[in-house]
Length: 534
Image 1 (cartoon, one colour):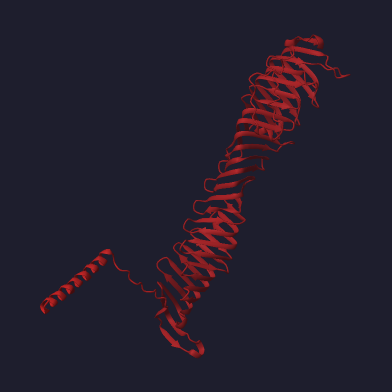
Image 2 (cartoon, rainbow, N blue to C red):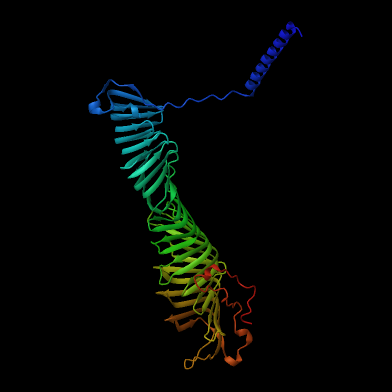
């Protein structure tokens, strides 16, 4: 190979190397841009302006003394004051008089004095401190504001104003990034008709929602609320309360595992282990779900609902699938209430028990009406009919009216024989809770067993028919009987016809009768046909 060929060969390889280098560069460029090194953030505090600056190491140490329209800048924030001591080596300064820190358009901090640490980005503001963030304003005398973590904490008392809501406490925090305030010790929240006191409270200024995390009392209109865990929205006036919270309003109390209150509409909802108490009328409701409306007087209980009346000598326990209370003329002197109970009503009191499908009680005429197969028991007596009306006076029974197909039965001490009265209607009149007079009206049929006073043996069976029967009692014992144009027969005990032992509509429903206050939950329907008297 001659020299000329060697030169051409070298040129060829040089050109090939250049082309390869260009190709690699194009490939790298096509693959994506190269990562640039980011410059570290400048954390130095800059003095922008001061009317006067001097330095006196003997009097002020290493500080630059600034006077008049002092202006600092640090990491996006501007700080102003009347005078300052600037410690440039430690990247900090003390500010005096009309201190103001501005961060963007949303955060403004003012005070009479502040110490600012540029390395930690913390402002220690003192005396007449005002932190304004969007629509919320915090007032205090001592505030440390951390710009790196966007929160300030006060420890010598503070007041947060958020719209119409005013929050005060001894110590607390405010986070400007989450807009959340945390208040502790002697916390007070005021908002128009609402006043809340507690020792620990979280408040979201973005949603105006307060979170109660300790024993707390809330006054909302005429309602008084106690809760240890819950939420209150100052805009919507709604409360969400947990852990057996209590709502009181004019003698009425609502308790539940979870309680929801709306101060605007006056509605209250309670869930699980609900107890509603009316101390004015001496009654209460329990269940697993309940409602009450302060403004309308409407109340409802369901899910193992129990109505309890303790206005009389003995407490009455009554269960139904659902109870409802309606209040009429609530803002007038003629106010009255109507109670509805349905279905599967069962009631127990020591002296009287009852079952029916539904019932209504109205305070206007103090009348309780039992509908659909009502049955009542008193000691060894049983009473039923198409409808039963019980009228009260001064919280005790005054008189009762059995309307349609009335039937009364009394079990004799031998548990085999029964005194019976059948008629169209029956009325019973009471005095101090004891029956004193009883009337059987229209198509009256009577089966009665006279008793020998000497040995209490049964004399026979007296079968009688009459248009009207009146019985007069004293100390719950028969004193006198009056009948209109009676006709009947007295059968000796050994000569009683089989068909005279029981009247046609006789039934003895002892298997249905509530045994105690716990048995009211156990619904037992009538049997298709009773064989008790066969």
